[in-house]
Amino acid sequence: MNGRCLHRAVFLDRDGTINVEKDYLINPEDFEFLPGVPEALKKLQNAGFLLVVVSNQSGVARGYFSLQQVEKLHSHMKSLLEPYGVSLSGIYVCPHHPTHGQGEYLYDCECRKGNPGMLLKAAEDLTIDLRHSFMIGDKLADIEAGYTAGCSTFLVRTGYGEQFSEYAAAYSTEVVDDLPTAADEILAINPCV
Image 1 (cartoon, rainbow, N blue to C red):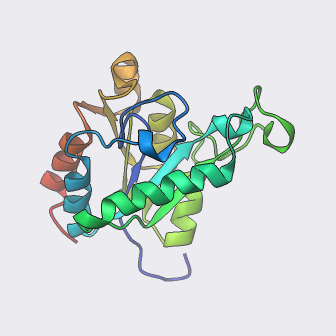
Image 2 (cartoon, one colour):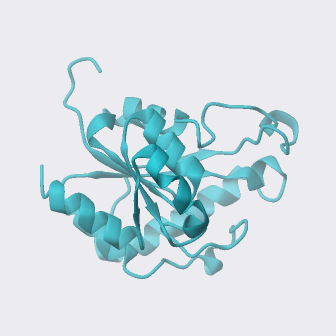
């Protein structure tokens, strides 16, 4: 990484981890944080972690909504975090799907979780030390992406997490109730930079 100082990051799945799971969420007015999430993100940020959202958005590939609509939703999410003093270091989106995409989005890419492409791109862009970073998500794909990238991983029981908990041991993944619990676990072993 060209001798630049490396940062630690917490990679965050969006739907079911940060916000209430709603199938193919796109309307900003339907966005709703899960309990305690903004406060947990603030604690992680205060401890020196970069906060990076990595989100599969196959609704784009399927033609349900556009990348511009996704960006509008993310702008809304960022504005809701501002009163908490939380600033996301990056938001990375995969708009592809290997079998259900349309046009240019019908693509078996490296960015779609469980591949690590979004995490690797963020690590390059933001000079992140993946071995000292974390991935928090509610699906097996989140855990696979984090594990393959070299991060420590947490599976939350919110969203779809409960149905994937049986796979956690294979990826040395800790299963926790929610993002705030994962944040507390991270901070217990990494209190500050």
